[in-house]
Image (cartoon, rainbow, N blue to C red; front, side, top):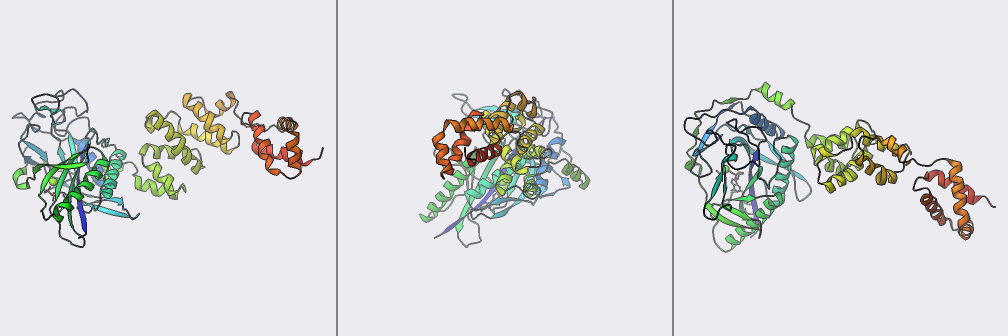
Length: 481
Ligand code: ADP
Ligand code: MG
């Protein structure tokens, strides 16, 4: 029997805010354990939560970026359960009025097309503390710094069919949170976490099978690996006449398998009820529009513009929009330089190569947009050759970014030599060195031109104007002695 997988993802995104979701405790990552905990984070009796405006606005931005509709009256709820990392005994979350409803994420399919994975909802909630099982020989330790950090949870419809589509989905979510500056998207550090709900069914069937939820994938490729493994495991179960147990499974990155963690709780067990200590958050239409106005241009519209307005190839455009800072830098250079194709080449190849070598981000690139534009202009105007630009001027600018491209060309003496009398005497010198080659050329071996040009280039340290050099050689060789 042929099976088809049905996959829905739940993505938790830690919002980058100065303080926690419902208190003024710092939410900075990496502090010493239990140093960012007030009685509110610790859930002491008598403390009261307060809304964090910055967190709510960041959540709205994500909803707008994914074409969701934004809920006007946002109520909060308590999700009750007992665990050591949850000191209040409940998590503040949203239940019946999620901030964002609907929306979709475009993903590329295996067939080369694109499809929209619909979203069920995005809601706001708070993170738990962090249990550490490997820090002490006998006990599990708990760090409450993370408790109360603002989160949004993006929940997809079960529209995903393969591990690859899931990979594309999470990649797009990560790119968007980075564009929006709401999260660093770091799955290794857990600021972006993905749970995958997976079931299989006979191909052609419309009913859903029993789903399994897989957790603990700390990279996007592990999300794909976990899904691929789980699909095969479930197929094998059904083929052996067993049934799928609804449960939560963990992923073991070392061997790429999943293992049973616990049988799934149902919503009933959480005894959700309205959070009495927080007033509903009102998100009026005008407030939503104000927030929309603060959003940067997003990758899909940038892609459209880069291909249409700048005439870039689909490949160049998609490489540039991968990272917001590269895309913006490209445009900044284009403000000063109309050879857009050349700008794209410089930004996607040498600039990116330098940043990768140095393990730097685009924000740390030393050369300014006007200076890079100036360098490209010097090549276009024939002042320097492309290879001199790539091999000498660009590295020099990286060292002295404020020196200015033109003045480095002068001080390093990089300009193309187009002094015809100098080039002519150089040409005569070279021809005199190879009398037999000159004769061979004159008797029809015109391919030897390359050799003469090469010799002149060598002697001029690559600076001889190639066109002028060619012309001079032609006339010398075609004039009989
Ligand atoms: P739960 O109540 O168990 O959390 P939800 O209905 O809230 O389940 O859905 C959680 C996630 O599971 C969503 O992303 C949804 O798309 C996905 N999902 C629901 N049913 C299935 C299924 N049969 N197979 C795969 N994924 C599913
Ligand atoms: Mg759920």
